[in-house]
Image 1 (cartoon, rainbow, N blue to C red):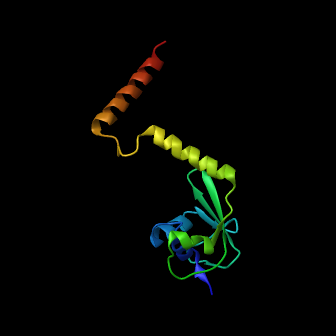
Image 2 (cartoon, rainbow, N blue to C red):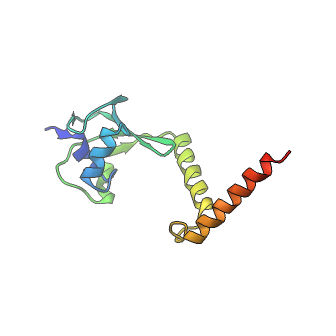
Image 3 (cartoon, rainbow, N blue to C red):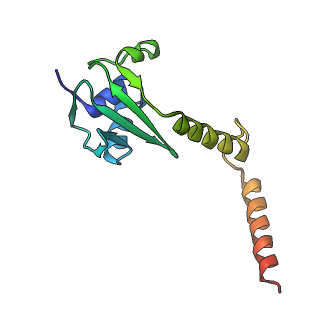
Length: 131
């Protein structure tokens, strides 16, 4: 039995949609056995999958193949997480830095926020030009 990499990524919940899984593979964010691939490549048991997410690289080993998307509790039967602890820490640090940048639930900056930022940065630029 063989399964396409994009479908497998979707089935084991590494991507929310199959389209997103295909895009990740096409952009080179997902590699099989440390080499770039195409969304239609078939994978087999024992292959190593690397997923680049922000600054970290997550690594997984294929334990079994499947045809249908499974629940989150069953993913462990099909995929083994081999991600080094340093990469997990790197990802957590990225998440914390993003949370510090803007509080959760505030959404995107408003027009007033944008004007305040523009004003701040123009003030900073004017300040550096004065000698």
